[in-house]
Length: 333
Image (cartoon, rainbow, N blue to C red):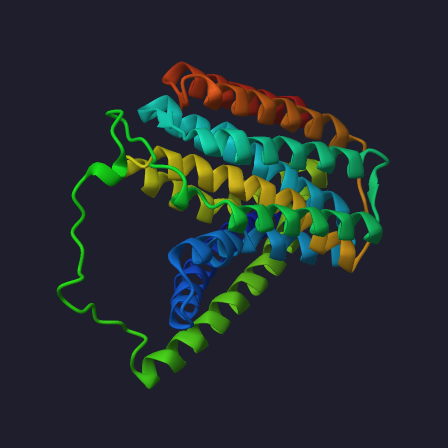
């Protein structure tokens, strides 16, 4: 039993690494393909990159649901969202502070709260039907439509930590010198296409082994599938969001860091669970309700704190982390 548990734990860790590598390859090369067809950076960011960073969540939830592990499928979504705003956003705020834009608070913060409320509504009877999955997807399409109709880039100048507009700073542009595009050569195009498919395939394979090993770890440790899905699996599938948000924060772009995490939460709740439950109905344990109510409260608090002086301070970040850790303790105990 111990040997089997150790093997499952090692497989779990390796699966997380595979997911991270697959997501990195998929996102970078999907963005190149999108730009090759003339899509703007904004469109690429809102669609290709957002979907790419949440691809591990989608792959794991779909694989778990099809395998009959509904608790892992839903716990992965709920746990990832808790981790995104409780640990990642809270941790970044606790270290360096995070600023936000009025548009992000008003539009995306509201979308995060409403999508979590909708998530709670469809989980309330401890099952998610195909019809409810379609409803989640319709809501997601509506959110994306709003993003395209009223993009931030056209209406606001994000504010940096000194209170200055980021657009006020000199930008080293390349209008005078042509930029070499690695997509120009036909060979590069084919390599990119192959790497894109390979990255997606890596995500799918990693997701499959992550689900299988997570179930084995849960059985060996005497933990429920929900607890494993909400903690270890959720943290593993959130790796791309962690990398993107920390990188943005290190460059002083706290609004981008917060926006990435908030957008990921909306994407997970509406798209990931929507696709999963449309493919197959999901049944879950009663534990899901308490954790999702906790997520709703944390989402409301995060939106309110971001709206206070349009920033998250160190104390506020530490508070978000403590709330998330408190939920983990309650579920494990």
